[in-house]
Image (cartoon, rainbow, N blue to C red):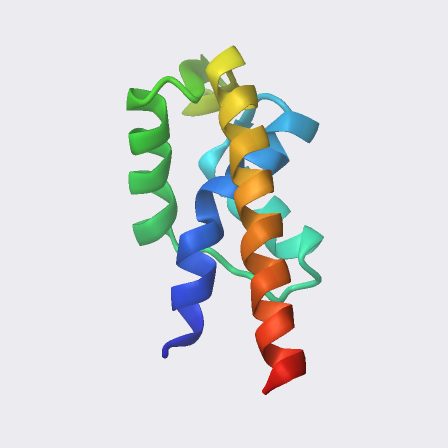
Amino acid sequence: MKKTDTFQGSLDLLVLTILSRRPKLHGYALMTAIKETSGEVLSPEEGSLYPALHRMEEAGCIGAEWVLKENGKRVRIYHLTAAGKKQLAMEEARWTTVSLAINRVLREA
């Protein structure tokens, strides 16, 4: 199993969690926040993050808007929606259930 398999399954949870704590981040800032918050263990790649952001936006979990930065560059800023808050609660519950089950298997094995 590749190292990224486990991470890939939790990317939505990580993005929703970061946006619940730090609203209005652009994609690169999200990648950096995940990396820094995880103690440099998790490092999402653009090829995974941006498709996930588009998918979550289409699902209504996050909203996005284009803003002009001070340097004149346009960036897409993401924020959590009400549906995203509900999704975050479901993702957290799912993660807790799965991690408890994995821990049981590790202890029993």
